[in-house]
Image (tube, rainbow, N blue to C red; front, side, top):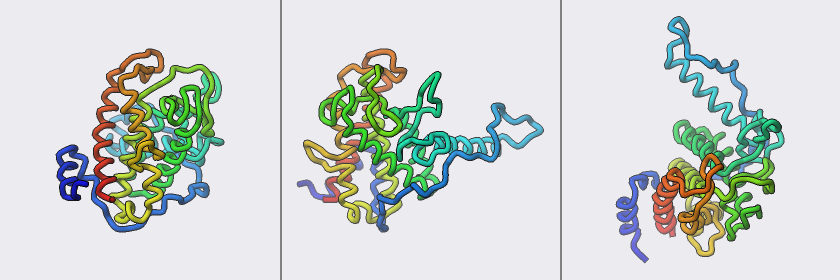
Length: 278
């Protein structure tokens, strides 16, 4: 096996994001409950649809408030405590509170990964531990969805390409544009970013929570871990056609290819992290 020093060199050559791999010193408890949190999504007053006039607050102050309000409303669509999505499962990122005409009270793999990516960015900026609970609930929900049989298949038979699920985490069996191959790539990117962000805050994460880490990435084939499963799906499905992000056209979409390219960069980093801890 290569030495730790040679692996560090490979990581540095392989991707600039390797700087995120510092391993700090505090334990992390990933199984905290968020059930006691109050609902998210309450803002001081309804958002204005217009930019402020020259006689009102300065633009930078208005933008600061709008950013805060927008983020609170984003959290309002995440179960189980989102103010706009009562009944949604823990960690479910719901597309819309609308349940009829149209009904978008579902969770999409793509949309959820992008949304939680924003939450990860906010955690990186603020180190607000409330956000860790939300992200961890999302990860647990995604692990459940990975193992939920659906019209696209099962855990090892194409089911990771299923685009949407019910708000409680059960399969959606209606007609839809499936499969959508960018979902697993985006999800892997988001969960890897989460792992890197938490690892940069809590020094002993990789050594003190081995079971939790292995549930995310085990480096095995066949794999039983969340990140590795998505990476393997991307590696085998990248040349297969799927529905595009508008869910209307079957193609090898360029946007999907870009996500896969980013996914490969993060996959390299994940392999480096794994071997450096062995």
